[in-house]
Length: 157
Image 1 (spheres, rainbow, N blue to C red):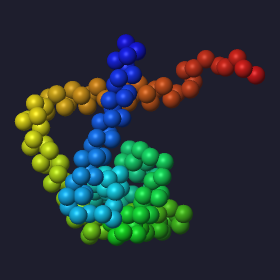
Image 2: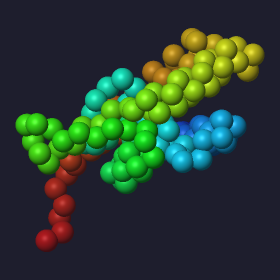
Image 3: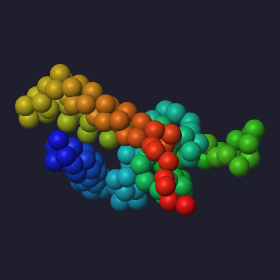
C-alpha cells in the first residue's frame, strides 16, 4: 500500500506541472508574454468573481506561497483591477479587467478543445468522475491528517 500511495502523491504533482506546461504552450501560441501559466490559471479561476487575495488561496485557486506577487503582476499588466474594501482598508478586492476577461475566454476555448479531445484519448466522463471522487477522498484524508488533536502528545520536553 505504501508504494501505490507514494506513486499517487508523485502523479498528482506531475499532472499539475504537465497541465501548467499545456497552459504555457497555449499562451505562447497566442503570443501572450506578459503573464505566466500560473498567473493565467489564477485568472481563469477568478472568473466573474470579485475576491480578496486571501480568498484566492482559501478557495484553492492558488497553491503557492506568493499569491500577492502574482496578483500584483497581473494588476501591473492590466489583467486585474484592484479596489480597497470600503469596510476594511487593509483588504484589497480583485476582479478581471477587460484584458483579463479576454484571456479567460481564450483559456476557456483551450478547455473546450481539450474536452472535445478527451474521448479520442480514451477518457470518458465516468472515468474522470471516478478519478475526481478518488482525489476528493485523498483531499479529505490529508485534511483530516492536519487535525493535530488525533496525534498522541509528544514525550519530548
